Image (tube, rainbow, N blue to C red):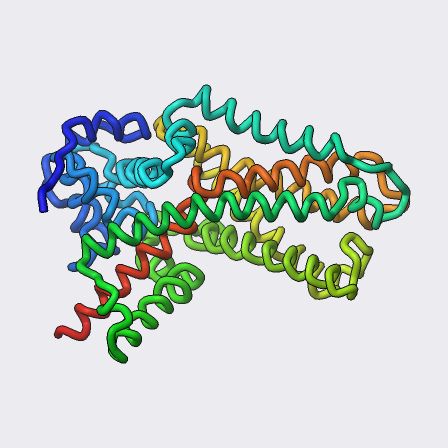
Amino acid sequence: MSTLVNPNLITDLQKFGAADINACFSCGNCTAICPLADNDAMFPRKLIRLAQVGLTDDLVASKELWTCYGCGMCTTRCPQEADPGEFMGTARRYAIAHYDKSGIARALYTRPVIGGAIAIGAAAFFALFFAAIRGEQSHTSLALFDFIPYSVIHTTGIVLMVIVALFSLLGVGLLARDLARHDGVTRSSLFGSKEAWGRTGRALWYALGIESLGQKRYRQDCEDDEPVEPIYRRRWLIHALTLWGFLGLLLATTLDYGMDLLGIKATGTPVPIWYPVRLLGTVAGLALMYGVTWFMIRRWQASQCNDTSKPSDWLFLVLLWVTGLTGFLIEAALYAEPVPAWGYWVFLIHVAIAMELVLFLPFTKFAHAMYRPVSLFFYGLAKDRSANSV
């Protein structure tokens, strides 16, 4: 198989935020200090070298891009100040754009003006669309959810999810194909025997249970102990609360819609705060807001030292934060008697921003939520093979 070399790879990567990695002379200090580096994942020296020699296909098909948690230890220990940690983040942005065939991700990451116009245009479209079909205001809590017909919200959400699913499946499918080729994984090695099924099951559990939800390596290996941060500011906790909060809100929304569909409880009906679905949504919302707020604080603090943050990364965080805030304001409006007039417009903003957040899933930093588990699955397979070959 021939290998294609891209002589413009470093130049293209720099559009996504990378520092001048030509300063790296491959001393290996970053790999030596990285707590995640092992025989199956060489962080980040290997990937920097791939970029330097122009091997695009090998770079985007590297598990390390997504199994890296961005702790930054490599950057703080780099004698050449080549900023390998920022390179890893840049390479992830580049990979997102590489697997997005619409070109939207590239525009969001490399063309701030066009990306801003896309973001503002999408929010304005959803807001105007829902405003055009809004109903009458009333003084009852249930009518707040009639202000924009819930059937329209549901139908629009389904259409968006189908569109996003198509883009997401295409990107995930291309990544899985490339990872399989890179690691020599075949259909028979996954499902060809009882042993193969066992390896596949263990890799899935590792990717989804142990790492994606449990954050095991992030908790145990990626916490630099100098200085020791209080528990409430730990990176793994912030990441976990954001993830669990988002999944909890998704589950609460799904359960609420299901109960409405089954005639158990109409959407928007006032219930006590300890009502199971409401309690789940409240706790998940608090977790999400806490995690996202700390992510924004950390990103702001980092931006004071260097200018590596991309507007599209801020876009993802801001959309999450506004969605969480407006959700709590809607909850407050539901318990007010009568429903305040501002509640209707907050509801409109909430729905419009939530739709935009869903729409941008495959094109922003949010995309790592679908690419990381795939890479962790292949990493789990590699670890399982290594353990069984000893």
